[in-house]
Image 1 (cartoon, rainbow, N blue to C red):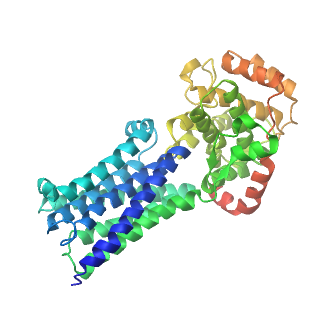
Image 2 (image 1 turned 90 degrees about the vertical axis):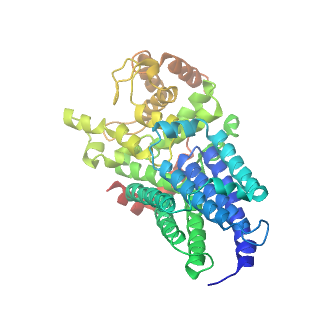
Image 3 (image 1 turned 45 degrees about the horizontal axis):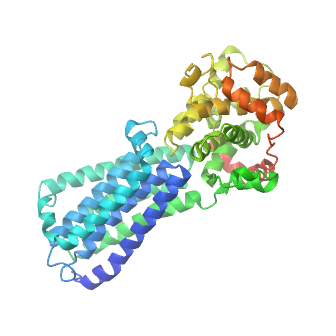
Length: 456
């Protein structure tokens, strides 16, 4: 028995508070980056540390009277709510629950922070409030523990499957963090206060929270701001205030895609830049432009699973090969819906090959059934394909490529988007993103091994 209430109160309380504040900052970063994985994980960390803060400040003999019940209830609430948020983060971005969270993400973050703060205040003023929550009595406490352990292990399994596919450090950290939280839950419900095992679960809890935070930091520490690169080289001041960043993990996916198709190096970047310029010409708001850029940068990620001999075939594809290549938007969609992309980005990835007259693929959407962002990117994608060197032809001039796009108005392309693109080209305002070379050249040179591993 280590009866150290002072250590429990004066050390653990500030630590939990600092982690909770860090989680709020991370959550807001997730909102700005339009990354649902970072946002949901931040809410999980906030729940864990915010409710455990009640456990710490209810240390007997300090702020509140002897309230072992409050400490036990708050710790279980913390573990279970954290498990729920981590479990929700495993759901695909097109799930109805995640769609709601995505739509109201700012309100949800503010509301959840407010709830946790109010719960801490209520616990200080009315510590007996925990008497209404009977989750620390047998068998209810074991049922709660079983549910919590199940959610953590389910999340660990799902994130391990995703990590094997995309090798994101965030996914690895959630796997290890979820396993540690499972151990924490088991130890927590089977030990007495002040025993060595009881102290041990506090240490494991701190390590797991730090690991989850580290996963987010590792995921985004080497962000590249594509808009700043574009602005610095080409001097396009009207895009200066649009902050769009990609993590090193996301860049690895782009590099892996372009490594398989040697004739499309830089294609994703150029398409995103052309799409941004067209979106700006059509007066889209900055949030939609961020979604377009993120979706555009990774729109061809599904080609990772397309055989190289089909991607790089010099001649015309036969019917069977065409079926294989036309499946890449669905593959990309299935990958990205589990790695934090929101609905708007997913529509770009899945539907950039749909056509205005309904003859496109993969879903045969027609007209405005296709999202506006996908209709914009369709033009940017075709324009870059025509003006870039391919295995079967030399690049076309801007005039010839523009003529093809004009001829496709009303059949392949949205007429409104075509009109805006023609105005953009005729006015001389369409800027060729020559800056892509130093971004992708360096990435290809230093990350080819990782890219080949992903591609295989």
